[in-house]
Length: 72
Image (tube, rainbow, N blue to C red):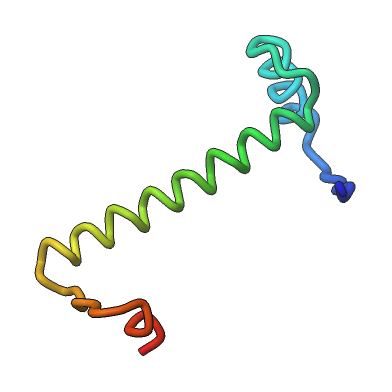
């Protein structure tokens, strides 16, 4: 199920979005904004994974003996 979300853009920004939709071959503005949101979420996850890796490499981790240890 989809929800409809309306946004308001200044004319200049709307024109840029329209140009990018045409230039990049998106089917619609909605598809373009879904792409942007997915990219944002992917970047967010990547940053979290990189931070976790840094902590692991610094020795800041917990050794698990079983899955129950995840709850502690």
